[in-house]
Length: 171
Image 1 (spheres, rainbow, N blue to C red):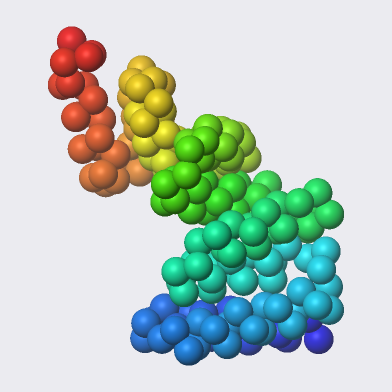
Image 2 (cartoon, rainbow, N blue to C red; image 1 turned 30 degrees about the vertical axis):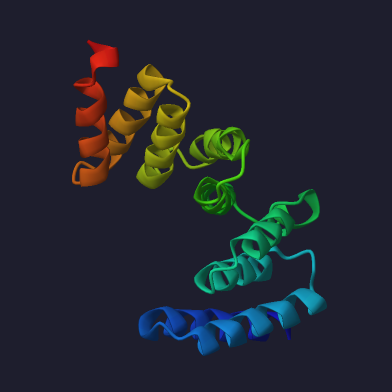
């Protein structure tokens, strides 16, 4: 039963993204909630709910759902790479809010994310962004460089790296 609700919700969210339909995203969220009610220890429906809430622009609620997915009870149902992806998403949401202290918590999530998923260029890019926000430019250069090594066509990483390499603080 829970799996059926999850699959229906994932399909609805894919359709919502393709058509930019908030109504479909709300239904995806409802399906995720039904799956959670049936099996609260499975992280997947929590992640689906978080993605639907993020699509709806409800970042705070999406963060709460990601926190549930990454809780000790639910996180054990995730592989390392899935946990790494969830940590990346939580960090992105945290960085998207304007609250103080979010960079530090995002940095902690991203450090763990790249440890769990060492081939995730997007996670290294986000880690570089965090380091840059904290004025830790040498670390940012290393993170952006790793992102570019992993994905040579990653233009945003290349641009960030070039900007830092030529900034007055690094010369």
